Image (cartoon, rainbow, N blue to C red; front, side):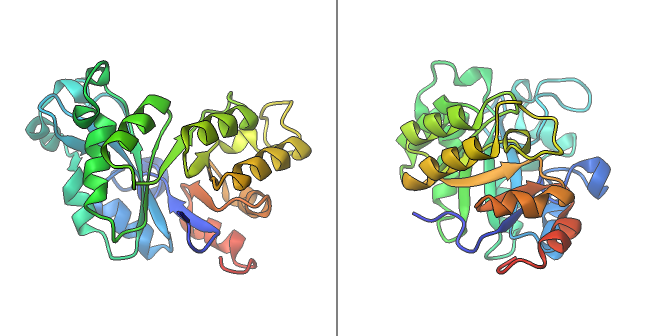
Amino acid sequence: MTVFAEPPVVIGHRGAGQLDVSGLPENSVASCLAAHEQGADWVEIDARLTVDGQLVLHHDPVLADGRPVDGCTLAECRAQGLTGFDELLDALPAGLGVDLEVKVALADAGAPASASTAGLVAARAAQYADRPLVLTSFSPAALLQARQVAPDVPVGLLSMPFTTLRELVASAVTLGAEVVAPHVATMGIADIPGLPWETPDRVHQALAVAGQHGCEALVWGVRPAQAAEVVGLGVAAVCVDEIPATREALSGRTGA
């Protein structure tokens, strides 16, 4: 299964980027449509579970007023300006890919896969099979729950900067994930104060092992000045806040 059909793929982070970059509400229809207009191939959105078992899009675990998202109803979240999952997916242009990041809730502990955040996202994602998409999470358990509910929906394992690329690839391959999604700080790029043991040779070796197992690489946190070097490593996709500048940085590459 190929997730990113025409690399390098540019993914808009939370739509058209974080609020302080785009000036638009994150995870909103407006932000995702702006990302598309700016040249993004995909958008990344954050899915959370409400107390009444519905899905809303929000990065942080709490609302602007401090209440936890998973302690509020869908109606209460909407009143705070959050967008519903289906509302956004239904509003996106055909062909725009979606990276569905699952944010795990406390209610997922011990819950049946079908009632978990990942399971609900996977079930919804299966209904949009005509759209390029991948379900990602920092939680291996979430990917297992998604697999149980919708085995045909591709999944990807995310990591924070303190997880080495080798550790991430080993875990993603063992899970059977189609995508491995490290932070740019783990990619061995000289101008990034990342992990000191991530040398270019080790990065190439880890990516080669991922590729041998059909696991594509999506790197997040990429700045425009880093984009060409990251893509040059053989990465299929970059998740960015600055879409036009990233497009410009990649403009000299075939397929960008």
